[in-house]
Structures are given as C-alpha cells and as structure tokens.
Image (cartoon, rainbow over all chains, first blue to last red; front, side, top):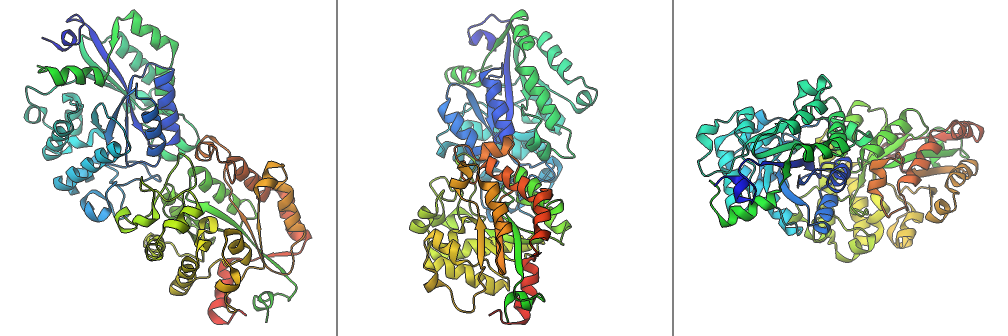
Length: 292
Length: 292
C-alpha cells in the first residue's frame, strides 16, 4: 500500500509538507515562521536548539501544540559574525568546534574534523534539551543536512529517529547534494521523501526563486513531497546575520515568507489538488504500520 | 593630588566618561554602540561576553583598538524571551542559573541563590574568554551592577581588578541603589566615581530622559563623572528583546542613542568646559601613582 493510501487518500494524491527550517535562529526568523504558520500555508517547522532565540520559539511551540514541530539538529554555524555552538560544554565535544568554541562554518570542516561519538553526544543532547523544555517533537531533520557528510553521522541520525520513535527526514536528493551515496546509506524500509523542493542560489541570483516555488506547486507529482523554506524578515537583524552571505540570506528568506503567505500560493494548493500533510500524520501510520 | 590634576588638568576640571553598556547583547545594540563611538560623543563601552552577539562586537573591538572597551561582567539575564547564561558549563556553576540553564532575571535571585565561589569562577571565565579572543580590556564593570548584591561578590569584583590590573567601576551611588553598604565595602584607596549619571524609569515614563541627560551635561561638577547609557536602535529585534520590559527597553535605548549622537550634546561639552577622559587614561595614572 502506498503512502497516500495509508493516509486515507487515493494512490495518486499529491501530498505536501511545506516546512520552515531554522526556527530559533533569530527573532526575525521566529516571527516570520510563526506568521507563516498562522497566516500562510506553512504547516510544519523545526527548531535549532543551540541558537540564541531558541527560548522564544520553544515557548511558542509549547503554547501552540497544534503546529507540527521538529528538532532541526544543528552541527554548523554558517554565518560570518553571528555564531553559535554546541549545547554541550565544548570540553565534551572538542572535535565539533573551531578555535573559538563555535560550530564550524562548513559541512566540509565538520566531515573532516568531527568524531562520530561526539556527533552522537551533541545531537542527543539537543533532543534532550528540547524534551526537557517540554517540547513534543513531531520529527527530526538536519540543519544544512550536515548529517549526510559521512555515513557514520547519517547512521547516528537514523538511529536517533529509532531511539526517540520519530520520523526523520530522509532524502536521496539531499544526501547526494551533500555527498553521501544514498544507495549505501538508505535501506528498503526507510521512508523517503519522493521529492524535496529546495531553492538554489542560481535561481535566487536570477530573481527566479518565487517562480521556482510556484512551478513546484504547479508540477507536484503523486506521493510525499516536501518544500523546504526559511522564512524570515529582511530586516536589520537578519541583514546583520547574513552579512556577506546572500546564499539563504536575508533577502532570500523574505521571498520565502512572502511567497508562502501569498493568496496566490494558497489558491494554487486548491487548484492543483494538493493535499497538505504533516509529520504528525506520517508518524501515526509509521507507528501502526510498516511504511513500505 | 586630585584626579583631574593627576591627569594633567586643573583641579576644578569636570571630567567625564560617556559610557555605553551592554555591547554584545544584540545586533541593534552593537551597531548603535559603534555609531555612538564613531559619530557621537560616547568614548568608552563594555562588552557582555556571554551574549549572542559577542563575536561581532569582539571583531569590532579588535579592529578598532583606539576605543576604550571593558568587560561588562554579566550574572543576570533580565529579558522575558531572550535568554543567555554562563560561559562556563552549567554543571560547573549550577547556583548561577535557573531551571533552564539561563542566568536569573533579577539581582534578588542572584543574591539569594548564587555561591561566591561560582561567581568568581564565572566572572574569571568571562574575562579569560575576552582575553582569548584577543581583546585588550581597559576596565571592568558589571551588568545591572549585580556584583553589589552581596559583600562577597563585591570583593570578588574588586579582586578581579587587582588580578588583571584593570580599573573597576566603583560607585557608592550604584552600590546603595543595589543594596550594598558602601561604608563597609569600599576602602580609602578605592578609586570612586564622583557621580554616576544613570537614567531612571520614572524619568523615561514622563518623557524626561533626554532632559535629564542634558541637565547632567549642564550641571557636572569637578572630578570624575560617568554617564552610563545603553544605545540601541528601537527596531524589530530590540523590541523583541525588551518585550514587556520598558525599563531600559528598546525606546529608552533609542533615546540614549539619539541624545549622545546629537549636535546639541556635542556642543554642550564645549560650552560647559567638559573634559572627556577614558578608562585608559585613568589606567595610565593608576599604574604609576596612588590614586588618592
């Protein structure tokens, strides 16, 4: 039985999660994420536990349990002047940090220097901190999909899903983008997303990001699709965070916000017979059935 | 010999440090502090090492050594949704934090729960982190003057000045405001500020904060005066930080910025024969002479 059918829809249903990454990063990111959930068509989000504005979004999540929210497992800190590091003391995870105690900027440094044991400790600590705050995560995913920089890290990521009985974002596309051989690191039983729709820097530079999102909505295929966005306001704080880093920067994030709170995109969902689903929906059938 | 004379001025000189507290708190605070130093009459500032935007202001401080900058020793996190905690692992300083691992909101909680040993460890770690980043602090001061909540904490604060050979902001006025008996906790040899000029909430509420600052400039008396301000922009980020906390909140900080970058206040310095001095100036004579 295919996934749409298990969820109670016809086999050919176009399922879609519209997911906001990076909540907790900043006040701008938090407020735009909340607006996208409340006024837009975003229906799931995930939280960066190590980030400065974690507390604010954690309060929101606790007070608004109807919204799907996951733990956005974080191992990199990509910005130039705005930095964050592990929730564990640096002395416990020295291979995860630079000389200042912050996460590395790039996936490449993480792949090169991080020990699998410390990756496991830190990611577990992030989930535990979320639970300790009273969050009830609906899923796990990974900031910059950095868990796919090494097979050992990827296995830890999958194991954490088992351990906490949560669905985990698994995608051949993202794995291959980050450099992992999906044939070796995915099993038959793994729930895979059929297609991830994620903006690209060349599209942003050409002013075509919004068109890309609209095309994604118009050309979805049956099965489980995910659109990954990063809504934030292009304001003073967010410009400061993304200084010299236009890739997934402040302007990009404003486009994400504008697009997924627009009436046009709302109407396209209906016009294209798109069925929004959440990680919580998927988790319900995951817990009662085999998914393949 | 009195302080003005030691600094090479006549005995009756009105000396003034215009000091920006709380750098590192936010991007808004950092950028307004930098503007106040570069375009305004602020001539010294201090950095909160545990705060999220520490890295940005530390880079500025390293690249702009001409500006006096101190370590704004931090033991409280007063905001409602924006939180910070110790630079040391929570497990090493458990009496300094709330159930979520953040500093207490109030001085009263700090006074009640914090152990002196852990205060010493954490404040030392903040200075060491600043030094490790390559900062060359010109002075030490204290966020919310929370070091004056207990005689033991105050002694630690003074001892850190000795240990790192740095001047420390000592003020009868601030001590008494926070509840410490200055007669017991200050010695003859301590360098005391003659008068601290710090805005009050009732003045802010009455719309009289700017007048207060102007009056301070017009009515300075001879000796060493300090105006303590908190420049920031009243923008989305800073409004988010100071939500439900107008005392030293976003609007207040914009007034601080506007006042001390205004042409009017610049001209009042000259008109009132006010001599700006820095902690670095004071440190020079402190190291070669007795100050009393």
